[in-house]
Length: 349
Image 1: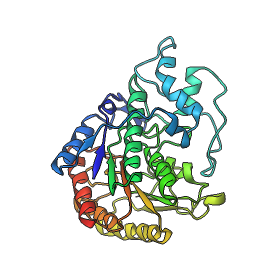
Image 2: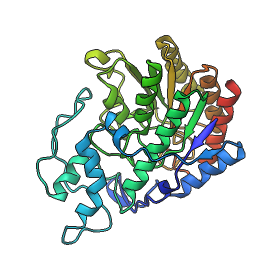
Image 3: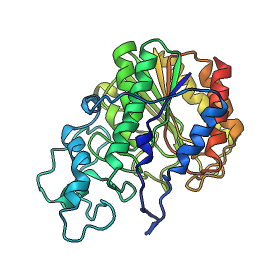
């Protein structure tokens, strides 16, 4: 197995995010990356610097006007009379928000305040001077991992920071700006045909669901904490099964808050069974480590043994696999959780 990571991904340095009614200290800190890299070192997995693929591959899953906003957001924000320390939305323009709706029209107003409100979906995706550079290189890590697997590698791991599974076709949210798992799936689809994405983050992969909701060439499965009282709140329900050609190609499995290893693995086996019935030619694992019992943003009670078991069960599928890093905010625990998952995955092969 190879891993991919670019040092520019460390430049993203968020200063704040909105959490339960207050602006608080960020959780997507750079030290997360150090812990994940340390785990790869312990496993003797080589870490490669991805090539610069530019922005063209990103347009396969994201609106061009949205990508333009991400590139220009910081510079536009500086034209305000008192811009503050980060780009953050101050408005929430109404839009229908149906799961099957891929794209909105481009933002008509030219004001940085209006454009920020249009393209940043909440106050947990602040943008600083280096956010776009880190986001682009994070996407390149996912692209490089997918290209490696498409070229014949058995499996690859993309250490993506910022994460991506909350990023929709034209909107950032939840610490995510570009959907790295969707990018990997799009590229694998070109090489293999049928692809599945299994998201095991504690949060529902709402961006990934939205991007593929109308398609039948990518099966999207998300196993996550119940969203009726938990982010992202508005999606992640079992009755969201896809629309148009994608009807029946989206599976959400929400689990009760406080769920531990045994019950989680029962639900995991349901997802794995659906996955095997679909018979994909390649797999993307959106690996969130924030379902761990000690994660500061989590509401589940999983242990490293559970991550090991998930990895092993996925490894036994012996599918060409790209593992894309999503959440996980306990700096002291995510390294051991990643190590447990990858050890399990490799042993299952």
